[in-house]
Image (cartoon, rainbow, N blue to C red):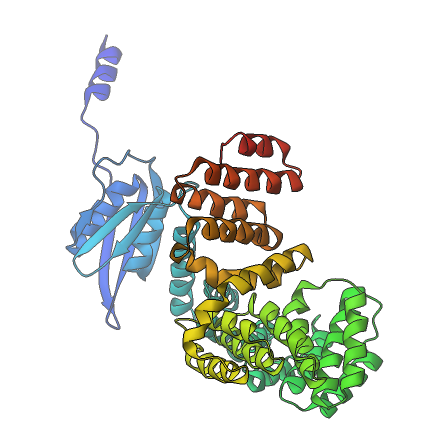
Length: 483
């Protein structure tokens, strides 16, 4: 009986409060925290830290209690202690002078941008807290990758440069120099790119980018019009690092073509470019090859082809490179006597910084054939007819370039003319951007036509495009009027 009574008394006794020892002190102006407990929930530990540090704890309401955990942290920055304990319960913590704020951690349902933001912040905090730690190099690379993916190239380059400057002996130094140089290439800063690739080639440690460094050095020299020196570097590359890989041979041929062009050896440049093209498509060099093709064609006086090459190059170019391509295309079109082409390019450039320059070229082109600015509207029908002929010749990109400015102003046309323009534009778009993009434009114009015959024509056009793409179920629905 006595034993039973003791057991009951023990079970009914009130639970002892959890012992949580929290000590705070200021070291060199920063608050450091020590926490010791054999077992307590993260919420209890954070509540005690908030009480001792005289901060308000926000975000615990409605949060399910987590399992008890042991904590033994000595003299760590307060922010790190709070974030570490919060992470044990799946929370994110923010510490300021008056509050400790808790938010649920990110998960599978959250957008990629939010996860990247959290990754960026975590790496940035770690780098600032431990700038000389060997893993700081990896953190800088992650920050650079995120910045580059978001299009902030200058900021990305600064992170890559930090790796090569502060961690020159790191295994990541070579890749950091390569990425830094590639960003300068994208920005058109060929001198800075050359400096990075030279540093890459001169790294004392072994790395897999020795051949790539020399190829990029030659590329930068050619872009800086130092063709003879670029050719010398390419010849050295072939001796030191011969290759049988098709992609590598093609890359070297493209750079050699650029170097020959810079050296004024146009005939050899054309042959090198043709040899590279024969090896197949290379997405890495597509843009550079098209730009070089446009320049070489202009040197040979084939201005109409050069203008088309510049327009093709502009489709994948960015920012200043695209504006420059439009200006060059307009100039070449004028040299070819193609005033319609110049006016088309002018429409493409409307609202950009290239518009004023191309307007001046267009004015000269008008004068060349005795037109004034008021005569331009009369050329619309000719542009549509020319685009129709180009589509018949399977020249969709050129037709799309002609139709795009007219399509933007389609509401100015009568219904029949507008219907023809919309269907032609969709056919050209299907060849360049795919059937889904084309049908989306047809669908967008459907409500603009009240006549059943016009709406049927749009649906029939969509059906033909689907059928050509062998999407027969979609074609049947489109022919039946479901767009």
